[in-house]
Image (cartoon, rainbow, N blue to C red; front, side):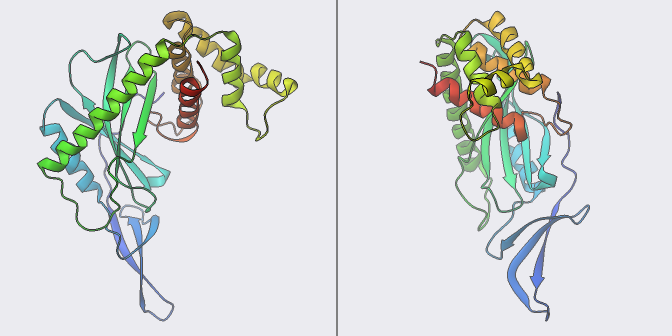
Length: 276
């Protein structure tokens, strides 16, 4: 598992106008990296991109507000999406009695696909399992100027606090939900089934006996043994699997992208909705 985000975001974006074959400038712009000239996206001339230096500035403004420390950055899809991780330094943070390292996440897209968004990443210290929750809480597209003054920073921190407390409440509810072997097998099949149709009995057996099926079941057994036969232990079994067992050379800090994120999200929704 990747332990820490990158300390620096060392490249910047540049915006290039697109021209017709006759040289006439269009209202479409290309957003590119300045280090390798890779095109990150095509946007209209109304779109105002948020430069990496502005994201970094915002993170350090939050850091200066107290109880936070900028830990680093991650980039996804070649830089189309970038995320900053800011450690919450509040002492004694715990989730269901377990010590954790918590990160305020701020994300930004360079391809026009997303708004500026915030979220939270929990890293349980006992096992380094990682779970993240991301929400586009700041619903402004990249148009007009960005004002990262005190009022804006306070609003971001307020929305982050609401998000993290909601997540804590949900995990506390998971601890009260009891599970058994049947429910565990059903979730393993649900998470690893790659077919659109519901699996028949034979397909279900194949999933459970597959390499990933065995690894996921072993991860769940490990965590429910320590945390109890409840949905919180079950969820931690899944995050153990996505944090430690998935062999992905592009795995990022926080499990915020790719297969790990999808499995964690599916498992969380399953535990919240399907387990009484």
